[in-house]
Length: 148
Image (tube, rainbow, N blue to C red; front, side, top):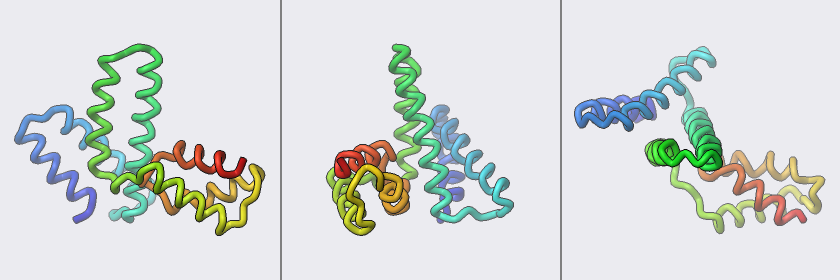
């Protein structure tokens, strides 16, 4: 079952259960997927593209969450946290920091990186491996840590 099919099924269930917040998030995700399909000029989106879109949606929410926390907007923070839980349910299982650190170490060895000058080369090699499975900021932190 494709992600779009899953979203359609979950949308129907949310309508029946009158879960307005969940329905709203599912509609936003569905719209993001459909907009990307239109942009690409295709009917079907690859699973990799689906993960990219979901990761983008998750990142937008993380960024907004940080801003709302700085502005001390507890009402919006709570709403965004609820949305993030829903978006997270459609993403692949997230890796722990230890797993990410291990993948970063292996990738650094693979590309032969030795200094901060190799940062871009390492990030370019490691991000496809971790796409949708962790936050890019976590990867960034470990790459900087191991290259310094």
